[in-house]
Amino acid sequence: MSQGMPTTDVFESHLENGRSAVLEARQTYSNVHLTRDIPDKVVEGIGDLEQEIDELDKTLDVTEQDIQLAEQAEERAGILASIFEAFELYQQRVVEADLGRLQVHASALTELRGEAEFADSIDSQFEQLSRQLSMLEKLAENGRYGKMVSNDRVSLATVEVNLRKLEKKLINEISPDSQQRIYLMACDTLLDEIHETLLDLHDSNEAKTAFSPDLNTVKGLINESEAEETNIEKAAKNARVALEGVLMLHYTISREGANQYLVEELEQTVPAAKLDCDVKDAVLKADVDTLLDAIGEFVGTQSNRTSSERIAQLLKEHDGSVVQTIESTDYDRETVITEVIRLIEQQRISDINVVFSS
Image (tube, rainbow, N blue to C red; front, side, top):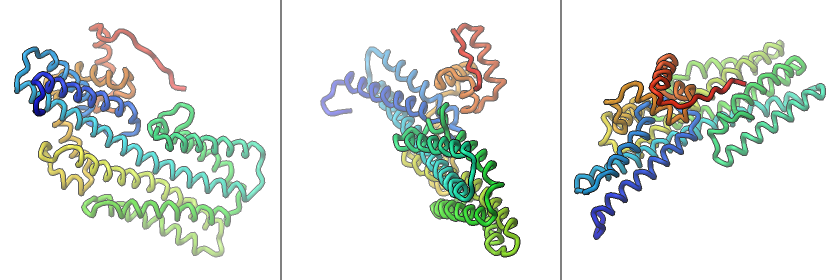
């Protein structure tokens, strides 16, 4: 207890700090659009702790036990906020890697564009691509990584689709030797990033060596392309297939690197003594699932809830979005829809807003 502070003031201070941490957790979670599967119990912890603090706030005669409960709620709320901060940092790592990969791919296409004459329509499409990449870069500069995934105007996914369409229009007009040279340069750039990520993984992390066969296959294609002297069309084809493999490996391995970063952040967030797992082993192996399950058990208090109550809470945390609730939790579509219908019949849902896909 703080020296000299009245019992009630200490109690209310813990509750206020707990509420602030719950609000912070909720706001951070709303910004995380690119996540691993966060255990439902962690997401539900936002509403659970909010309810727990509200119940404590009804206490009239505050005892030492009440202060202890309020302090524990504050601690768990602070940990919960830090957990979602870790996921926000995970999202940043993944999004920055994805943007970097798109920039390398776009740079290669721009070089290809300079190798031949094209209609003005191609120029306008490159201008559009440049604007879209600039918008993504601006979002990254401002730390709005969630928007880079979910923005309706431009997102990482839409830019990648546009890149693929542009490449399809360019490819038949570019000489094979230019294709080979430019594609191999892109491969080298991305392979450097891949190897740097793999080097940063702990030796106990299976991902450190799991991709060796695929990397060897890609490097074999690169070597064949570089060694080919007579059939330049074949050399260009091998270079393009190699780049496709490197793009896929970069996507996957960058997420393995983000997983390693995530478990290290979570290790700093939750005291190991409070978790029912070998935290150090989970960190060394980047075993995110084991660590998150243990964290979910520590944070969550869902055991007495019915499925209807749990889904109602999850819908609340996802601003009523059925799609986001399905995508972000362990419940399948049929279960969520069934429970939504039941909640409507119980008049716990007052209105439904339907949004059609564009």
